[in-house]
Image: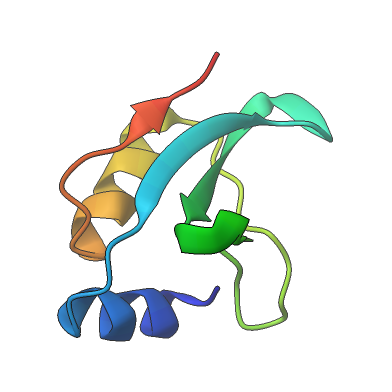
Length: 76
């Protein structure tokens, strides 16, 4: 899900369970996973539909705040 879509849906009151997980392709990076009802889940992606990854948790937390997300579960 692109940033704009996350902001729009969050602004409309849609609730996501937000998870921070290690990137399976590079375990030194982190990715954001949004889980929704009925078992649907989405990764945060860029404009090219590629999964966004973060080398530093500080940067990822800043991104979550920019998206309006107030809490997330971190999985090591």
